[in-house]
Image 1 (cartoon, rainbow, N blue to C red):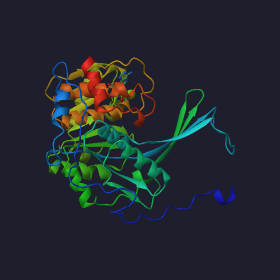
Image 2 (cartoon, helix red, strand yellow):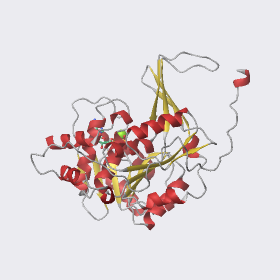
Image 3 (cartoon, rainbow, N blue to C red):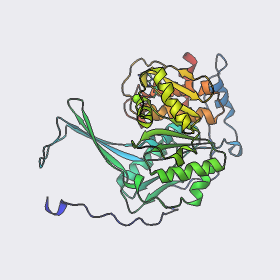
Image 4 (cartoon, rainbow, N blue to C red):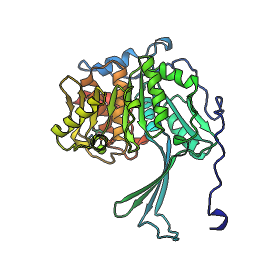
Length: 371
Ligand SMILES: Nc1ncnc2c1ncn2[C@@H]1O[C@H](COP(=O)(O)OP(=O)(O)O)[C@@H](O)[C@H]1O
Ligand SMILES: [Mg+2]
């Protein structure tokens, strides 16, 4: 090992580079979008396709964007027979590095659904940062608020897929967890305040999420917090500024310390979230579908839209939350939002990977025509 026994210490976090040439600087005005230029005339009234047709409006009438604030990660997959023993070097059967991170996943989902979407996050000045930039760009996400930092590597995870089906994962938080400015930049807060909706998760520091959620609330912008990410209590200061909390069943159980196996148990756990000040809770239940609880109202249940073949459920939760956010900002009813999200997630589970499996709007609309 010798010279390689330790990695060089990270450089100090340098000031953010606002005009990083690696990130093409798209116009800061709300971008124009062409939602569904080749949409077929629907055979029956469909609230989603009506929206899609209306949305080819000129740029100055473009809707307020979806702003996703969160993590961007390079997921390094290695396929191995078994974990190496101490001091041992083994060969992997296969290896692949894919862009991921809950924030980047959700932003790409918004972009692929043809809704104007900004991603606010951090990468390092390294090859993984370029991989993520390319993935976001490929999804049509606006990158003006993707910041690059010199003092930390791009967040990455080594995912060891073992032949017995066990996965062992090591996460390097890198630029997701460090080098955030103490006070977010004015232009970053401005895009949050210009949003139609803001989407957060828990893979960046709570202090950043709190600043974003506060800024959004002060501008009356609704905030959805996807509970996925670190398994730690959510600070009250963050919950106070959240409009919708979206956990899956295990996250809800961990957050409330309550069982979540039956509808009754889930309702009680959600009751605890209401007590903590969150009025709306969107629970994702895997193959059992989803339920939206609004305090003082009847819960709305949405079953899955069954997939002919389930290939890989990675990214289903991110797709569901982001698609729900898109439908909500487009003014759909809560029931319509749930259905739109279920359709997007159903398409997601039919394709391998997270980002590669996120559906475009036309595919979602086509599926909705059939159910
Ligand atoms: N087998 C499946 N078939 C169709 N849709 C699915 C399936 N599994 C999950 N989904 C959809 O994806 C959504 C999110 O998945 P879920 O597992 O609940 O989230 P997470 O990935 O956060 O655990 C579900 O509410 C459902 O709509
Ligand atoms: Mg799940």
